[in-house]
Image (cartoon, rainbow, N blue to C red; front, side, top):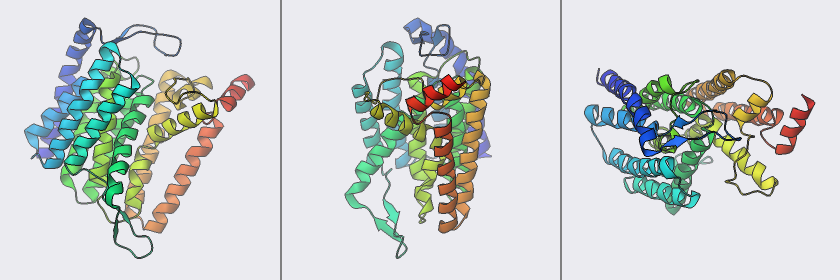
Length: 345
């Protein structure tokens, strides 16, 4: 009953606050203007992620018993939401964003949220990674935070992917005997789903960096404390599979830009959602197809978590191989292949 109450509080709070954010955002110039790289054609209010943030943490503190990890998560998320709000209002340089993300990652690590070990494949048991835990955790938190931020390109896209990832993390956490972490993930999913009422196409509000950075940070933290505490090799790969869409879309974008001798932070229109629309799919169909990919990845992760290590690795190899094949087919891996496919059409 406590979990149901928490989910209800998160859902209803976010649902009630989002219309207020829609009215408030334009008053402080937290709006997004259309341009040639964007797919929307009118000025849109940003900062919608603020309602997700408030809905989530309201439910957590009203219904859950805070631990040191939760306090570290909370303080880090305040840092993240602050830079997101500033960016939505007047813009923030990538360097400043990275600084805030780094501070948030350090808050999490100081509260004990770290990847402590890898499994000893040859002799079994845990193999401590010592000081490497700090750069590894730092890179994971900052990397996932930015990955979700970069995938936020269509109405409801980042929110839907994040909701599916949160649900998956929640299910696997419960299966692994971590009910508190499972509850946090399901509470986050409830807040996101409520927000989707206003964010799914045609959207009335964008989550902005306020939302995408917060969701990326939250998923990175929940993945560490909910998925990497079991003593199995496959547990270390589950977060990568669950968050496969934003992680690999970002990785492919970096490879694309490096091969084109462009800065890795330079924008382009060759992300997964751009390429699907370029082959003739509608806006809504594109989003729903990517949702479908995310559901398949989530289901694969759940299956992997109950298989033996060898079986799980086989499933993961097949899933990742299929992702690379599809990415190459639709032109996500290289700008050259993307242009070729457009010309052929």
